[in-house]
Length: 352
Image (cartoon, rainbow, N blue to C red; front, side, top):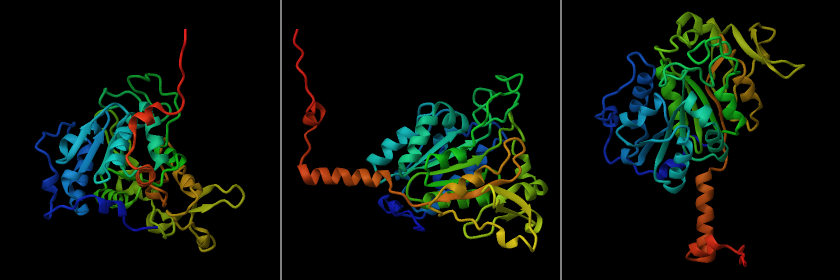
């Protein structure tokens, strides 16, 4: 696996050293006080200078939702676009302007409801763009309706007797869509969030990062078990490539594969089973284990929730392959003939 995204070399570098301040726009940040979006914004603004890219060649594209105000607050180019369609617009931009670093900011409602089709096709194509999926398990902008990631039984304004829908697991969905990079992190863990953002930026192709983000107005405390220091020890599984998958106080719990079913299980680590503890391989060609890891977390309690990079594999990048086709066409045919392309060879004459 390459350690850096060679496609970043196509993006012009900044002429001078940049700081977090350079990436803050002059727009007033209009999220509810205490919203987890503030933490993500600060992390992204703080991380951007590390890329060393000219901010004029960085673009943030969003759909509709609370998170989708993000482009206003970044001192880069950006577009607050159409509900659910940010991946499609970003695809067009990334493939036509390979000198840009293209980022998508979306929410669980925006990406997984009306935008679900656009998301999965961007992932399967492996376009060189980075997708930050803010997941607060609620529709915040429209004032608290259940979303595609809300747990079964969730009581909201649109489900007063409890939601009947089985929720999406965004990480499982991404892996199933053949995404080449899939990760999960938490808004309040600045260090972990930043490390995942760096890994996503370094990845050639589509990188999807699910960010658990608190909505303190309509779904406060949805991820408290993962944020409370004591509870998190027993609930959060921190994945590191090449390291045994252990967690809990002093690494007393681990993940093993059941020899009969092949499923993954959480066990108490003992001398007898220590050799059976799985070692995390984010670069495994098969997505089987990454998918199984994504299914460990219970949708209701969130116990045994893996965070970190679940999958990072090398696949042909759509932008590169398309550029190669265009170069080959020009080399073969010389200057293109748009009229001939539009007319094609299938013409009919209609006679009365």
